[in-house]
Image 1 (cartoon, chains in turn red, green):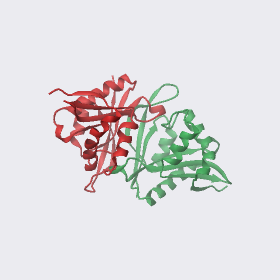
Image 2 (tube, rainbow over the protein chains, first blue to last red):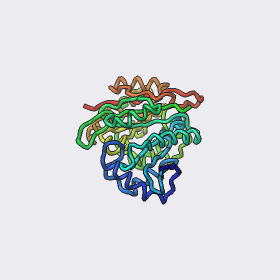
Image 3 (cartoon, rainbow over the protein chains, first blue to last red):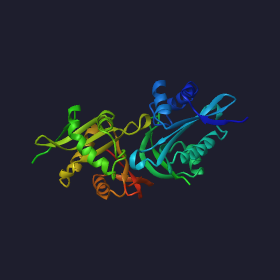
Image 4 (cartoon, rainbow over the protein chains, first blue to last red):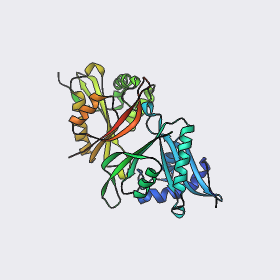
Length: 163
Length: 163
């Protein structure tokens, strides 16, 4: 089956929310409160970012990402993205497709680099994937990520200068 | 003369604003737009942070800092601070005093670590000062800081686990 990526509009959030809720409530990946409400999630994922996209297949939203400026002013040439894939759609390369798509969009928007601020070192699948896509670990934040078990693990800062 | 540090209230922002404006409009240190308005500055410095403090002497505000959670959820044990000293009051150790004060406040608020996300590598005075106060460079963001001259310089991520 063929999946497409398109820009999301406000009406897409009802389909994004279950994906967001599943991932954020697990507490293993994102720097959001595990009990983030739907209204807060919409702010974080749809309103504050520059743009939000969805990947869909036969009308069903399987994943989503946002792109935004990471730091204003002297940092405004560096963007930040976040990606989420529904658990039912994992292992099919959708994160890779979204990340590659986001790099194109980033260049179209005039960004020169992309930064991930807070990648849990325990999330080894994500770390490997970003490395494969050209991101380097440029920082290690000691004990900055507390897993739901209570354990503190390091978080990585990952970075890629776009072509 | 003896300077004191106290928590700031909304009525202090009129005294903070000239310091903020001088530093941010220079574009050499903070990840804020150089033309940040007074209203935006008040949001960034007084409203979004957990707390804001001023250092004053004989009723005059000479410097200010904020403290806030750096990343929500799994990162909520790590705080972030920003410090500003009026150009007329530099070289008197006020940044050191504020940073030490902020570490005490951080512990009182239950934070376990402090992170600076975006220290321009060209701001060598600040880098040295934070190192002297126990912060380590844990990340280097390639070309992430664009100086007003147009030059891209690296930015550091600095971090300290509090006692």
